[in-house]
Image (cartoon, rainbow, N blue to C red):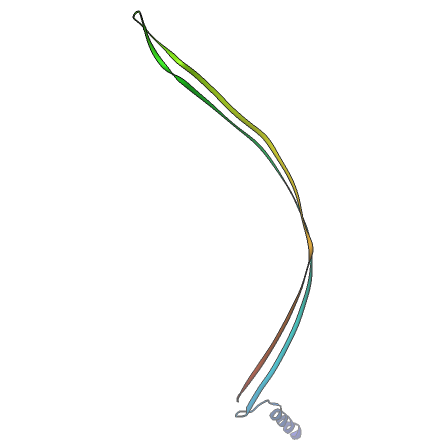
Length: 126
């Protein structure tokens, strides 16, 4: 039993990484590389329609002339001289129809390479 206990104590002392007051050095390198490839196939179709109806009109009335006063045997009368009435107008009616189809297709290929190197180092006394 004493031998087993003694071996257990010795194994514990030798298995511990560092004892108080010991120096240690860590120097560790890590290199990583990755590659990503992707193929994206696109086939997109867009259909659109547009309908437009329109109507516009205008009119104009103009009156031209002058008002005259006439005196005849004590009677007063009024009349228009060179009197003109002008009436004009315009109207526009219409429709518009549009149908469109748009297609975009193709393949996008991409490759991404990534490299990284890291170093960790430390030293000290425990």
